[in-house]
Length: 345
Image 1 (cartoon, rainbow, N blue to C red):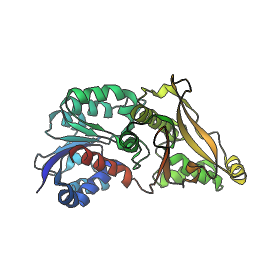
Image 2 (image 1 turned 90 degrees about the vertical axis):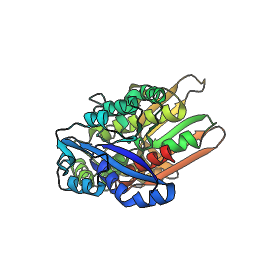
Image 3 (image 1 turned 120 degrees about the vertical axis):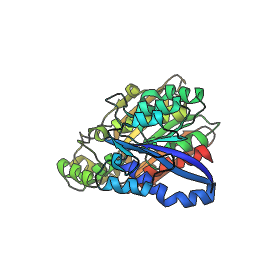
Image 4 (image 1 turned 120 degrees about the horizontal axis):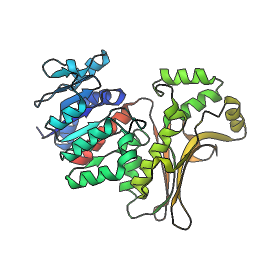
């Protein structure tokens, strides 16, 4: 048996539940390949939590969630009404995987408190939750450094695409002058449906049925999600302390099928493009999210309905382009596994 890594998981929605499946499916491979035994010792959802220092069965946690139950009802370990923040403050673990819903309107809570609590205890954090990084990027990195913890967040931008890792690790020594990205899957999917002749209502319903749109969809369709991801990219890769209010943002709700079809007839494809560009004088960075008609030969124009991509323009590494096809949430959930392995391997 390899070294034990004790994991807490906050959030058991689309990503958290699938992360449990990954722990069950990939545990033996991780042990054999990396010498790590990943032990889920605690998990929490919005209705309860469970904790066992000896380890929970991740497959049982996933099955409970599929049945519509709270993990608080897990036999022998669960407690209904136990909050994730209380679990994180009390449990003994090595790393927190924070997968609660993004909540920028409510100050990034409860995810921000979860991350702060874990880091203050010297616990590493791996999270695909954009909210804490958008609202407190510098603070959280300072907190991690003071307590000897690592903060990993590769899943916050473009799902399973390692956009953060590529920018931070593989572009070391470079100056990134411009970033272009299509980091939001939902908007591209909806625009493809509109271009195919569906009405706005029908396109939204199809996107909800496919699991790519939640609630009224405003967070995605009005460009907030893409703007949040751009803020994280600019902080992480360009080293610029950008904020959400720095982004000039326009969503896709003003577009209709006729406009999208006309663009295609003219050899262009609309994408919701997030762009960051250093000013020519080197002072400041221009950030924008706007629906943009791209020529068909453009790398981002070639992205399919459930694909995302990023382009980095650099001074010494040329122009790097990367994309991901993500038909299900599994790659996004897997970013937590990738982050945990980066921390401990």
